[in-house]
Amino acid sequence: METPGQTEGDRRQDAADTSTGYDRSHAVEDYLKAIRHLQQESVPVSTSSLAQHLDRSPASITNMIKSLAERGLVEHEPYHGVRLSEAGEREALRIIRRHRVIEAYLIEMLDYSWDLVHAEAERLEHAASDELVERMASALGHPEMDPHGSPIPTPDGELADNLHPALSEVESGASVIVREVSDADEERLRYLAELGLYPGTRVEVVDREPFEGPIRVRVAGQERSLGRRLAEIVRVEQEDVEHSGDGGEDPSADN
Ligand SMILES: [Zn+2]
Figure 1 (cartoon, protein in one colour):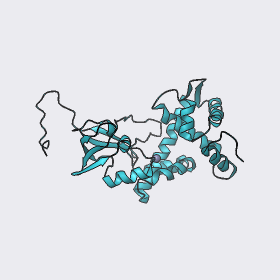
Figure 2 (cartoon, helix red, strand yellow):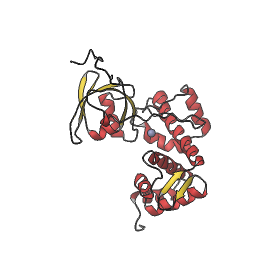
Figure 3 (tube, protein in one colour):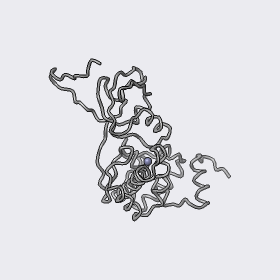
Figure 4 (tube, helix red, strand yellow):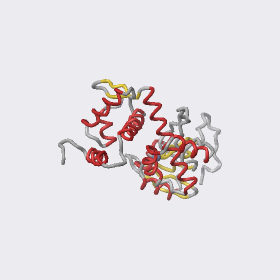
């Protein structure tokens, strides 16, 4: 039966709720992660941006926010939106740790390719016990980064702050190191792998076309063209900070 105003996500959720495998704590965890993610853009997080991000109707968002607020996981400001409470932040970081440890484990130990681990981790992060996740971390030697270059929160909920600019924002002529790529889009990750754009890879920005046009980069001696949307999900660190004087000569500048 269809209820007016329901989104596709609502219907999937209803179907899952009535079958096995999906419970309310799973949904709570997804909401906390989503709020934390959106807080990086602006705080508080509006109900509408949350609805869009989770593909849920405003009505179901409102219900869940009420229940999260009752549990002390979020603070709700009517007409403005929602922000994580300290307890909510702790819980969100716990899920993020699980997700990133699982991704690292799947790649390191089970030979998954990096485009496939996110979907697996999205499922397993809700099911794995803390014990299992800590054993995975220990088997990996307690990694600080996941395979996409995202920092893994410590068991105490410390998260390294590494906000790097997007490749799409870098000036032409700059030489940068890839630090982090967004893990959510399998197709784009496969393409980035084809280009060799992994964390740690050095990239020279050759040229930027104006008006949101593509960016030409040099990776391992080969010139490639990247669409702006793709360049937006690649976070980079500037390699050579420009010298303030004019003495900074780059021996490789003229080829
Ligand atoms: Zn992921």
